[in-house]
Image (tube, rainbow, N blue to C red; front, side):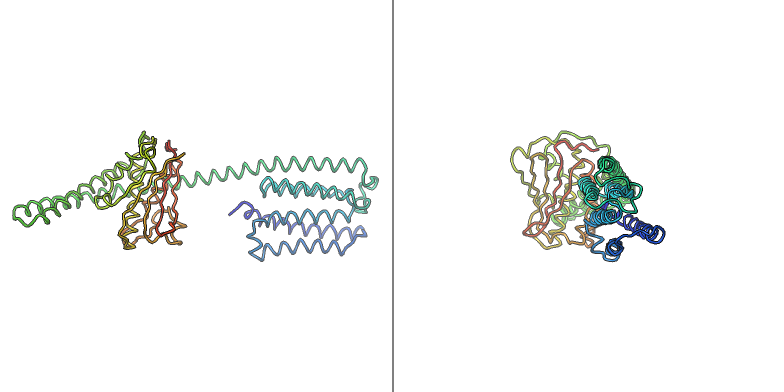
Length: 423
């Protein structure tokens, strides 16, 4: 929600209070002072204020409009100019209320808009010199002609005051908004770190629990391979048993890495590497079935061998997460095509993982990057791969972006500066 939307309820309440105050002041002028004023016009001005307040309160379309707050403040400046114009002109002591509108604009609006409203209020004050002399409400200045030095001095003083208020209050308001934005950013980072700490604990526990059954499976696979060789059950059975053993060893290596690092780049120093070496590390982290089907394209020799300073192992792991997601998208959509990885280098390095799957559902695309949000529950996905990749990109000052491809599928782009040192 924007600052203007947050300030709208406050402005509406303030306008209701000001409206009742004006009604009370006019009642005193009419019945206590016996002032002769154009009551019909004044009632129309008050009705305009009440109507605009009711519109933004009762009609959501007006309340959500980005120009709702500046429009209300413009109405207030114009209304105040009319009220003062028919009740004393520039000699009316209540001209000081123009400054309230400038202060509100400086608090609720961007600098350009608040300055525009300040200029409008100065013009409104100046227009009061075009009306007749002071009326009964402006009796304190009754000795002054409309263009006397005293009143012109008041106008100049107001213009200077309005300028100072627009500048300094606007600066303070901007500083407060910037502080709140930074605080929200810090809170978000703290929440991200807390989630990562939870994942670290979860990974360590999973590695501990899975170690024993994996060791049992590995031992059984060795015995099966030995028995198949001794009894000559066929090379296919022996190959399958040996494949099970290799996959178990790979799973145990992955679990050992999860125990030591738990998927984070914390503690890993950035190193000088190249996209070619990152791709080599990526292939080592993929299963043989996925690695052999991965097609890697470089935009040129410079892209292949350019220097990148980054946590290389974590970068390869994040790319492996994206490649596995693309492979699963092909399986889910029944597409018999390789996953492509395109590497581009200009002012930054871009790793594009391209698939030809069914694309991202709109309901998931808006929440992509949150933990445990996945499009493949049937394939056993937990929704943590993209979350970790996005967290890594944020840490190193990069960007993770998903774009729908025109021919179908998704372009998952991980962009890093050539010196991607974690913050």
